[in-house]
Length: 89
Image 1 (cartoon, rainbow, N blue to C red):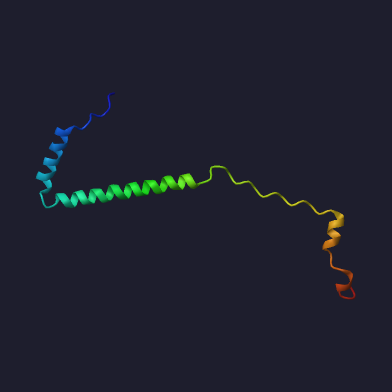
Image 2 (tube, one colour):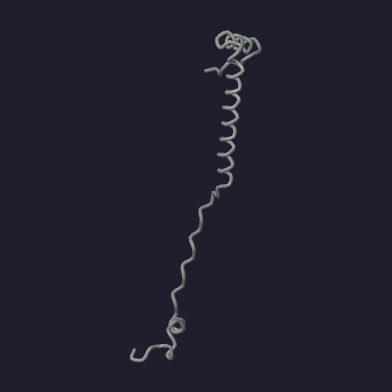
């Protein structure tokens, strides 16, 4: 299946004449302005999407390393000192 035909100067002139006849000379600048704003907003939105995709880190985050279990001599350091304990404990 062949691709779409290209639009030459004759076809473009025909489209502009038809738009002028249908819309009239008063509405044509308004339609052109609205079309320009639409294209500008579309470009802005597409560049926002592209930049957010570029800044996203493609590598997954590594989980934090697990803490090592305390050895017996380390757990003794975490206990309360004998003199700070209340009497009768």
